[in-house]
Structures are given as structure tokens and as C-alpha cells.
Length: 328
Image (cartoon, rainbow, N blue to C red; front, side):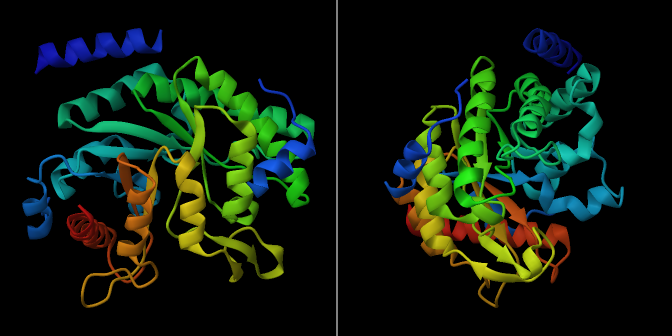
């Protein structure tokens, strides 16, 4: 193990060693056009599944925020408790460590020891890449540079970003085309994808976000379709927390975003007596995902309140395994 760890550290150290604003005609053209469940254990032996299952760190956000679980133990818990071998990070849980190579090396080491892949980092709190204010958008773009570098160091394929901004759909759209394009140009040299999640407001409008993707038109700029984040308007105009008053059709939204998808987020909440999610028809959703030709990682993001986090994650694993067998 020491030789493996030493070799991995060496590799990690070696690993760590624009488009302009498009016209509105282009934008509009784009818009138009430790206990693992029985089911999990059995399904884990399936050869060559059409998608693999990863765990998004947000599924355990209560445990991380309450300090019941340390960020560095995420890979171990994912493998030993849930039998999964791939993880998706959230930058909030190591916000001040993006440039700390020793800490990133330790993350690499912990993941390597468990045989766990580090797939992506979900980035929040670094500014709106769709901010119509040029100066603020420039700051947001540059704030993401360190996360591109961190993702490269960790061997991730992508960073997940937000296309937030305040203004009309056209104004935010044009700004997002510029912000995403410039960040993707930077990330291209690191072979890192910049992927946008439907994460509220305009970004939860599948037509709007797919239009932005078409206008950016870069191979390393894509989407992270989430099964549940399709609220485009909340009470009193609040971005988060307030009740949703207008929701985009989630199945249509995922269908529109799948042509650009580099990963998929299986958002789950609560389950019925058959083990199916009560808010999303996973069978219908996964048929849409498969029809698009996707065969990458589907990440679990459990956000329910009816079960403890571990149980909710296990229920989601079992549901994904069941649906995968039905769509194979």
C-alpha cells in the first residue's frame, strides 16, 4: 500500500504541476432551434451496464454541515456504506482548499485507497456567469479558474457551474453565452468540461439553456440535467427557498438538455411502497436519457426529508438499479 500511495502522490504532483459576446440574433437562433442493500449487492455484479451510478456529495449535506462527516471521508463512506465507486464533489465542503495542493493530494489518496473515481466538482458561490454586468461577470469567470485547476488535479472530467444573472431572458442569455464561452476557453487547456445544471430561474427553462448551449457551441461546454430542478419562478421573485409558482416540464426539460449532457443528476425525494420516487417517474426519465445515447454516470442527489440521508441514498440506488434493468 505504501508503494501505491507514494506512486499516486507522485502522479498527483505531476498532474497539478474566448469567445466574445455573441449577438442577440445568434442567441435567438439557438433558442429556437456500511450496509449495502440486497438489490444493490445483486445488481453490482451486472456486467457492462448502460449507465453507472455515482454519488453526489450534496446527498449528505446535512451530515457535512453538522460536522458529523468529514469531507475527506466522503470517498470511504461512498464505497463502504453504499457500494459505489464514483463521487461528485460540492465546493462548499472544501471552499478554502481549491489551491491547497497538499489537501487535494490527500483527497486523491483517500479516493485511490478506496478505488473511487472523482468525477466532478459542483461550484456555487463564485458569482453569476450570466451576470449582465461586464465587470461582475469577469470576476465570476476568474473566480472559477481555481476550480478548473483543482478539478484537473483531482482527475475530474468537469466542473458544474451556474448560469445565474439578473435581467431579461435575452440579457442573461447573452451574458451567459459570453461567460460560459470564456470560462470554457480557459478550461479547454486543462481538458475540463464546464457544465451547467438546470438550477433555478432561466437555467431551469430547457429551451433557454439549450439555446445558450447552441450559441456557445464548444465541445467542452455542456449540461448536467437534473431530474428535479425545474422551478423557473418562485413566490415574490425569490431565487431559493420560497414556494415555486411556475415549473417547467421536467421531462421536456431533460429531453432538451440531454444532447449537451456530460453527466446526469438523479434527484430523489420520497418513495412509495414500491420504492418509486413520488415526484419523478424514474422509468420515464431514464428512457429519455437512454434515447439520447447517454452512457455515462448518473449521480444520486437525495434531497428528501422523510428518510435519513443514508436510507434515502440506498433507496435511490435500488430504484436506479431496478430501472436500469428495465431499460437494458
